[in-house]
Length: 265
Image (cartoon, rainbow, N blue to C red; front, side, top):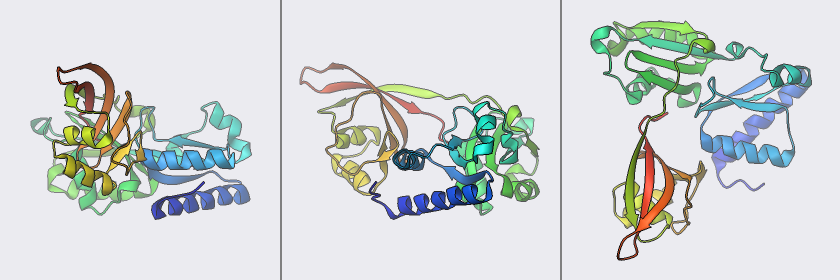
């Protein structure tokens, strides 16, 4: 498998170290949280290597961010039967806002708070936001620090910050906003231009700057054809589902039905 990016090579190297440690010490090992692109890179690599003793897990079924977890043979049956306690690997921080602040904070506000505390993104899993607060899935090693530090931030000074079990996480609700776009062809640059509300030249720049992913894989070819049911992610602009071609205009432009995720992860 040829890896195109240095960060992909580094990721594979770290995972290989986890696997070697697991096999030599006979102990379960896990990575930090991975985004969907990193997950796909690993899945391809592990399929080629025909390695089987691993799972991806992010605390909830619909997780966008997952840990790579490699386990020894002695735990294979436990993992397969869903009997492993993932609370030993992950933690969940719950932030409960005072009633007068309900609905004031978005995903970006919560993420910004963690960044302000110096927490790296890979230490954070999904952030599940509700009007009354949020549940944040995290790496276990930062739990104590967050419990002590979040309340010191002005935005959370009146909030209740606590640790909960994975079983107590709020249900994740995914909101999508549907709309249509009109494009001359299914080329990637045409679609990015409409989704990002920019010129085709600017859309090409976004692609060349490695800010565009299709089905969670990096795409750098502006003429790449986009198919129905594809997932397009534009860093800084959001995540979109290219649902279906619903018709054409009198000038033979394609009318495309699109959905945008309202809640970033």
